[in-house]
Image (cartoon, rainbow, N blue to C red; front, top):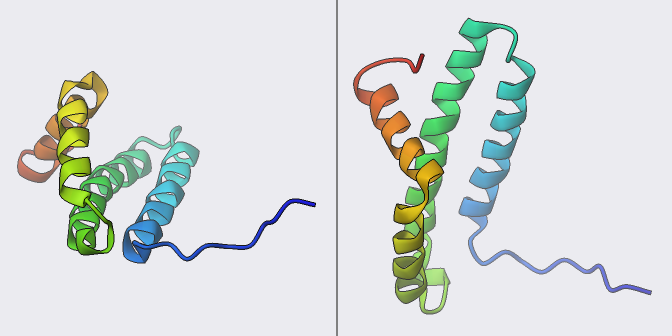
Length: 100
């Protein structure tokens, strides 16, 4: 028999926000055929993804050796083409308007 006991998440606020982001992604996908609804949900999703990183940073004291771990991850993320697009998309949505 497999032990399926739950382990408490050390970063519960981040965990909750990521669950919300996943729900938003599913909602966005379901609205693909409705351009206005899709765009609203996409804009919200992009901003929620960025806000999840702020929450993670707020909970960093709960993660041993977070700074060294996160610094390495930031460098990897900066090299990722999709994540660079996401940063630009978020800046566009927040500062200039909807994506086309």
